[in-house]
Length: 211
Image (cartoon, rainbow, N blue to C red):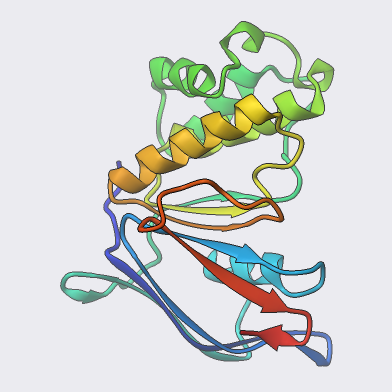
């Protein structure tokens, strides 16, 4: 697994869309081995916050600081990002999708690709075109891509979308394994996760800002 940060600090963060503050003065800390679940109505800034943590949205004010035991990191840690859309090509198979993602990270380990599909229960569909998979199966391919490169931090936007009950349990098990290895996760969801309380905190956002 990639080198792990030991702490994320968000300090006085303000994020703007157009002329309006989506999030104003938000502060929270996250330690290695823990996750934060972001809740809130549509338009409260959940996706924008995740994109800011990924470095794709510039804050209007405040700081995002990734640290290890020696102090702030010079660069963001290795991130796995999952958005609302799965980002799959209909004419590729799950194996081909994951192989492409692996090559982007310099990884050509086919065993790891198949293992990632196994972990989300999609090995039987490995050679089926993604365009012929159900919505839930496509979401599981996207989640397998998150598992593939063992990045230190997961940023997940509604990861439970289209998943059935068994797949939700599988995802939560994978998330717990990630946290036990010292990883971090920030995720938005309208469905509450069933994780040990010491591993999970909830951050509620409001449409007019954050609390």
